[in-house]
Image (cartoon, one colour):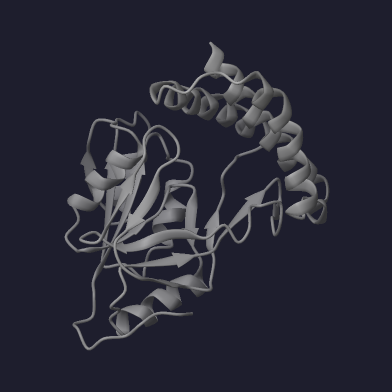
Length: 253
């Protein structure tokens, strides 16, 4: 664990989660947020029990029309009671070890603008330790006065004005319910990514469509150690190559 200390008052943290029909996964995410002082759920029109579950776990719930990942997360941060935000997704959980690190950080107020944390994914029955999926550092704890989400469509990213520190414990990620869910997500996100590329004025590149997928497969399997994750690593490499192919193909359409 690495962060700077100051003598300022102990910061309070608001956890924010944006949701849409997340009744299956939300409870576990909410239950992991005991290190936070407020939980805020911003829902974009769920028709399942998402809002009911959020309220049961003591979250404050707001309904806000979907504007895109970055804008939705920034809206959530703007509605928080506290300046320090812990942004998590409904398919993520704060591990007990990470929660303890966050509590320790709160007890020694930080002069930093944001904190990174490693994220580890659970895929088809096993924790993934290679394949480019780990340590997958994410900036999730941040001061909203000095950081915000940027980007459209799929690839939102945190932009920080100031120094950052790092936690060592994992944010746990449960990205897919199974193989079919993974396939459906790739179909959805490649469409969004292709829309983003076209909106920027970029054009279809046939060489990129043909050459990038095998390169991504080999990079994931060999350079990023996917082979060490066994058959799951092979599947991850394949799905990464499939994502690139479909994204480039859909730019043409």
